[in-house]
Image (cartoon, rainbow, N blue to C red):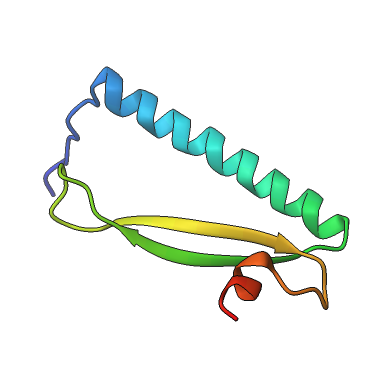
Length: 78
């Protein structure tokens, strides 16, 4: 069976990968802390388009609110 060799990452690719890893750690820590304080967490996928990509970018919107309270976004829709 042939070996598969991956091309080495560029410096900017490596830095971007490390930034994503660190950002996800921070987001997960923040979600855990908010949940411990009694917040309900909602995560909604958002499609964003950029000039440098033919495909949409998979972004997320994360909100924390206290149970039983109406978020400001929901109030704005009335």
